[in-house]
Amino acid sequence: MADRRLRVFHAVAKHLSFTKAAEALFMTQPAVTFQIKQLEEHFNTRLFDRAQGRIALTPAGAVALEYAEKILALDAELDQRVKAFSGKEAGPLLIGASTTIAEFLLPRVIGEFKAIHPGIVPRLFVANSDAVQERVAERTLDLGFIEGDSHLPSLATDAVCNDELQVVCAPSHPLAARRNVVVSELPEHAYIGREPGSGTREVIDRYLHEAGLAADALQLVMEASSPEALKGLVATGLGFAIMSRATVEMEVRLGALVRIPLSPPLTRQLSVVYPRERIQSKPVAAFLEFSKEKLGGKPPAEPKPAREAHAGRSRRDRQGAA
Image (cartoon, rainbow, N blue to C red; front, side):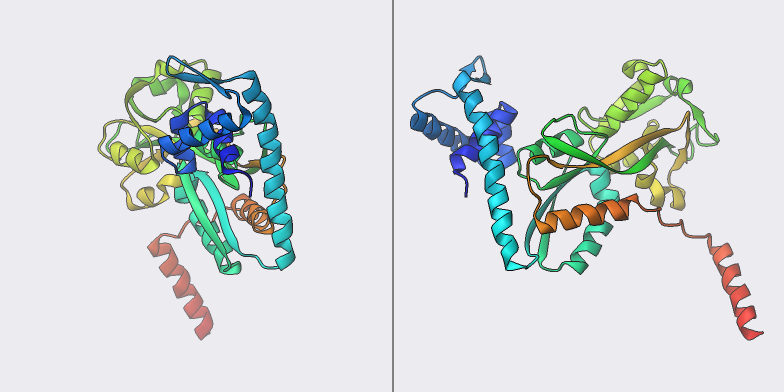
């Protein structure tokens, strides 16, 4: 119900970019520019300084942003409080997630939640951790799953689970036969990494720094923006990668890739973020608790090898016949 111009202004003020605001709001850039122009005419003052291809908030724009955040928060609260009287759990659920979490952890959780709450329609936005938390802060997403903690003060962060990152390489790679890889040995081999802004990359850079290695100490030969692309490149033997063990379960089982623990181990926290000053709707609150319970539980046991499983069945068959 809040003025559309106010929502557009809020997005531009957060991004300090008309282009990025347009992408976040699924609008064209001319439409965003028109909305800002209308709002400035309404207040009869400039809200942004535009110079040399950059924009910045004017003093009036800073005041407008402060009130815009309060108005949008109250608007969301009004919507949720009134809809709660219907007693129905229905409507969209806007979820954001980093690529790793979205591709390998959330699908099962969303599917199980949907089965319990058929009236709720989840929508999943996939990007790196920085982009996800920015959209949650803009209130274009209800909540987001990221790698690590949020750096935005307007967001609350809840830990969900821990995730181990390991060296991943092709079976023919020199590291493939190792039981573990000491961090100081990593610069000796070609490396394929994630793109800037990736939560995985941030965690790896911090790990290297704590081990006394500069972020550029590794022999970076290529960057990839998704786990799937990374796995494909690693499988060619081009170099090793450092990835979540959850992303390569299938490839390791099939013998296409090998994973080796790092020494010292590299673990990170996976988190869910949501606006601090926003009362959650019933669907959002329900999914938040459901996902924390599912992702925070014990990981499913890996399937037994075929021979072991067959032996287990044979023993049970003999016992049943006895």
